[in-house]
Every structure is written in structure tokens, then in C-alpha cells.
Length: 221
Image 1 (cartoon, one colour):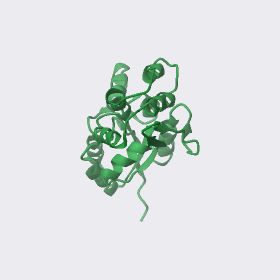
Image 2: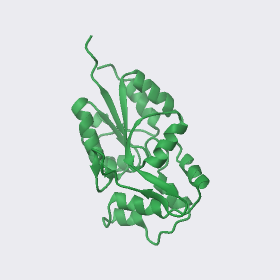
Image 3: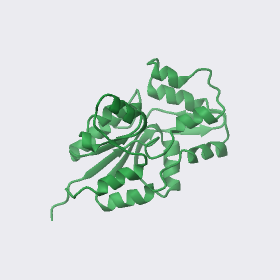
Image 4: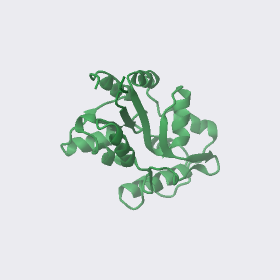
């Protein structure tokens, strides 16, 4: 029997698999040593996305339990474990592509009992120095501006599965979302608003498990 072709879903994490982004919660709810608005500097084009997150995360001043509580308040989709299991049973590969930090990504996935291929920026937390983000220079998908090159990950997926799917919500998700076919592009949040404003086709979602349901309803290739 011939092996069926791969089916690949490349997904952002913050705001896509979760309800809230870690950096938004950290800026809003945690004590900070920052004397500047790193995110606004990024939006204004003065620093890179990685530099903005690294600045925000390093300025966090709190203890471990408080930060762990904040991670929980990102609200990972509670239906994600079942959705992942069903997608895998249907032959799907799931790849997480994040410009955020694997420190909290792996914690949330582990608590949910889910193991996924994760490409994100490494980080180490200490109360006195915050969450120290580092560039993944050894990654085959390294990009200085964001740490992880999501577009390179999507291109690698498309080389194996021309109908690969991408899902995301933020500014770093715009470029990779344009690489997949419009019907294979799932968007929410900023990304959905931007695509809609520019008349670009996409498939909206509110929770990550809705993406899984949509893909599971498709006929087999």
C-alpha cells in the first residue's frame, strides 16, 4: 500500500492556541522594571519584534508562582488535547511556530498532556532578572528579527504538503499566512482584521479546536 501524503498544520501559539498572549498579560498585570514601552517601539519600527519581547520579558519583576499563574491565565484552549488527538488520528502533523518563548509554551502543553513539535525562542526565568529570552541561533529556522522564521517553516511544510495549513493571529503571522492557499489560511485577532481590511481571503476562528473541526470535516485527499 502506498503511504498517504502528509497533511501539515503550522500554528502560532499565543492568541491562537491560547485566548491571550503572554506579553499582553505581562505588560498589563505584572510589575515591570521597564522605563520604556518596548511594544510601541516595535510598532513604530524602531526595534525588532524579538527585541520588543526580550525587553518586556526581561523587565518582569515577580516570583515564580505569580508568573506560573499568569501563564495559566493565557487560557490554552481546553479542547486542544482532544483536537490534537483527533487530527493525528486523521493523519495530520501539527507544528507550533512561535515568535514567543518556549518557557511558557512547553509548560502549558505539558499541563494539558500534549506533546507537539515546537519552534520558539528559548527562555530562562529568575525573579531578579525576569524571563531572559535568547535567539535560537542553532535552529534551521532562525531569523534575527523574530527568532523563529515562520515563513521558512511554512515553506518547508509546503514542500511536503502543497495543501499545508497555517493559523495565526499577530503581526509575525502575516508573511507566513500569505504563503498558503487562501482556503488554507486561518486567522483571528490582528491578523484577521488586517487581512479583512486588505480584502484578503481567510477562514476565521475563535478557538484552536475550531480549526481542527474544520479540517476534520474535509474529505480525505
